[in-house]
Length: 191
Length: 125
Image (cartoon, rainbow over all chains, first blue to last red; front, side, top):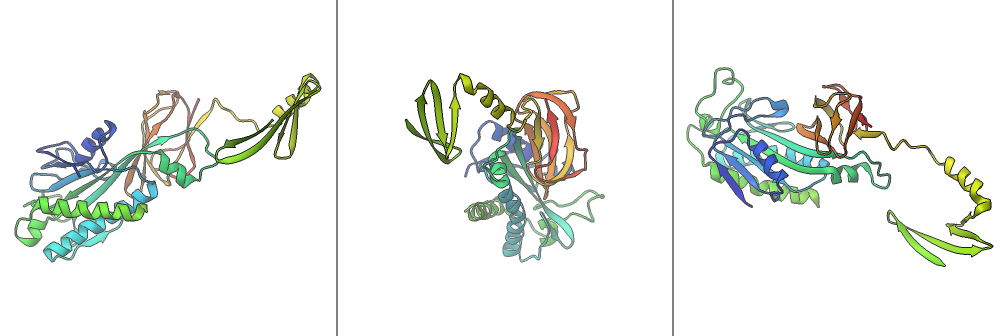
């Protein structure tokens, strides 16, 4: 699994999508130390200062149903890594947010590019056809790891592992554990 | 002459013969004759096929979700690979791109509208 590190990006999802369109291989991981325009669903900004873990993965071509399942599983994997390694009690807010003490600690956003074919394909079921139309997919994960302080407007809705634990965590180790879990899960659901 | 052809994975046995200046083609128990005398029948057979408007191209929802953003306007010319709209589903953002060139004839959805898989979103011509 190739990992590309950047000191700063506007958005890891945006970079991954850009690389994906240039025929980058599946499972290429884009990591940024900070994002200047990180976003979640409907382009809602994601607070992404230095210290957090922000990464996006170019996924192999999959059926859209499998990608939906993977998005939910990504939340479960992230929560499991937090629970198993730091003895914290994360809560998954379906479909894809992870909370600690009712505050958001992790968010996931999957973005697909789908070709809207205008031809009819009567011999293929909708599911088969949709699977063939997914041109590229990236899944982005933002995990508030070593963030010391949030702006006033986020203080009551966001937290970090550092705030909850009172100590720093190893971003690299967390990244590898989440990647390992995602790869295993996608293989399972695709079979 | 006997032939076996495969159309979309389904095999068809075909028998072609020539009798009295006519070409006869048998497919799955049905016989079709082609010749001067048969021109009228052939023409009737053609007109009885369901009409399809090949100049109209419909962009359908590939997944059930909510239209969160529309990037095109009616009468706009879109190119292949151009971003048409964003369809959000289960927190996945699906960027729908056109796979053909054409002019936007009709936009059948609005932003924030829920759509089902297969619903027509945009009509190109």
